[in-house]
Image 1: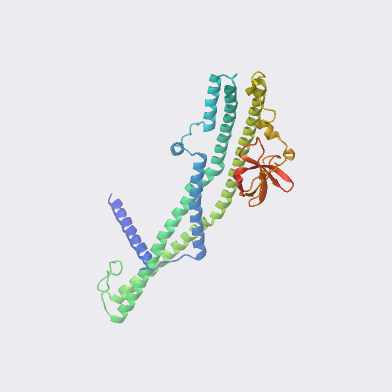
Image 2: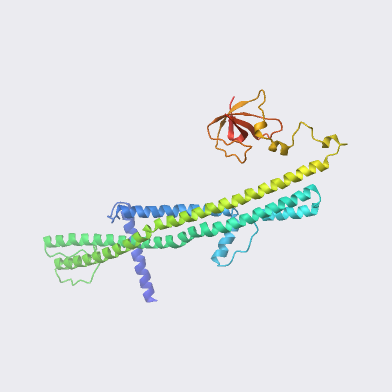
Length: 386
């Protein structure tokens, strides 16, 4: 117990001395050993990597799991080293609700059958999302977390040790400087009693001359300085090798980033494919329903001959669309737009095109012309000019 108390007191004294020395350095009242410029750049690059990795990791977690409660739950399971229980995605839950509602309303009714169709699509979307979350977590989040909890902790530990050794080295330099000054003063003034308040108290023989005592103190200070310099140089080399490994970390994170982008591309492509298939199914159902529900005895159930349905409007060949005699306007394109199919017109930001509206078209779209090119364009991408 006595040993522990003494060690604790010694550690507290060292900590206090380093804190005082660090404060004096910040105030410009003490000299400090500076690292070379290349080493400082490596440390700065490492700090930058750590800071941005933390931000990217945190925001990616929010992107993949917007629910903070679910994130906390996953964190607790991870710390307890237990497997996270499977959790249904929002799309799968919505699909299940729609499926149950469709069955209750009746699969033979238009609304019920449509609910069942949409439910199947939502279920597939939820499954694609689940696969995307798992892939992204393994290929992107895990390497970032491993860096923060592994490599960076090691770098931080070694940097802290290097900073402590630097403080010890500067303290040795200060003691050597004081010893040299005191020895010179003692040699000039003859026999003088050394000021033990300026240096650490030692069990000197008081009958010895002051010059001899200061010479011994000088030798000890020089020896301590050599030891401190050796330890500092060794630790600086270890820390330098670790922070130079940040370049390898960047290469690894680049590979993980590409895998994350690839997973996103696959996920969104699947979603687009599922939604296109759903649109086609609903379109066919709408067409058959319109034909089956038309009743000659009910004029309101028959569409006017000159009023095309939305499906017919989408199927119009753009080459056959003639601009109205009046109503054409110039428009400036605000953003780039890539045509989804041959009926649309791709746009380039800041270009000028001619636009007009055709009867039966969705109000969110216009017909755009650029030279001999013609196609549908979204209104939100345009600034209509007078």
